[in-house]
Image 1 (cartoon, rainbow, N blue to C red):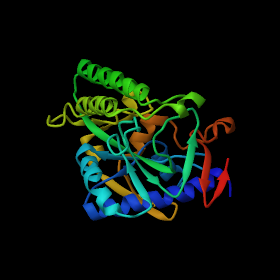
Image 2: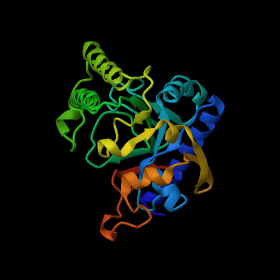
Image 3: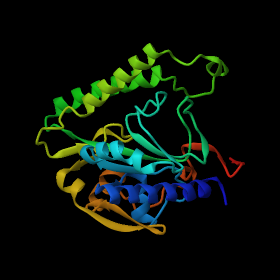
Image 4: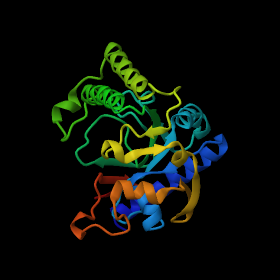
Amino acid sequence: MDLVDRIHQVELGNLAKIISLCDQLSLNYFLIGGSLLGAIRHQGFIPWDDDMDIGMTRADYEKFAKYAPEKLGHDHYFLQTAYSDDSYGFSYMKLLDRFTYIEEKGNVNNARKGVFIDIFPFDRIPDEPSQRRSQFARFKLLDSRIILKAGYGLIENPLRRHKPDPGPDKVEDLTQLKREREDVMRLYDHDQFNFYKNLPSQYGYDHEILSGTEISNLTKVPFEYLQVNVPTAYDSILTRMYGDYMSLPPENQRTEKHISKLIMDNQVFY
């Protein structure tokens, strides 16, 4: 079993836990990005993909963030958010397996580490292109400031290990920036616009925008040994994102992109 297979094994446990929590809390989730592509093209993981992405409407996302930690109790999972981990800089949450430890390529930081699933909020966005550009520019500016202030880097710097922990004032300053970023993301929460966007998405701006119908109409498909929620309009969504999504990429592009080292069961895997 190679590195990616071991990561997939753990991620399936994370996914089963998220599904169970959503069922208990009466919340909807849906696979997005490469995980959605894997579900449709491979009925499971893309063989070389080493992460998983899930989406929720902002309302369900906030309920999950509020109530899931209590239900996790003494389980071996940790719900990592901008507020549950002071050193975590991203604007979306992760469910981490605490029995594992990972190192990521080009992503050195002091946040808690473990095999994870990313859970992204989909926020309402306005119809007017200029308003969209303004919101996104403000989000990206705050996001960049937070990532820099939280000490994220591309390579390990030995000096960083000897830096003292930030004092309460600096933590509070970083927390305030995180709140400002969230306010920008939720700017149109109470408007009646019909489109939703994954603002932290790695894809181009237009690629992860879903209509109200697309985000609310879900169906179940197989994913390895699980049944998972995906948007019923997955064909339209995947075509927007990838074009001819059923065709495999060239062999030289079939490689894991994120995790370079895994520690589990007292063993190290590369």
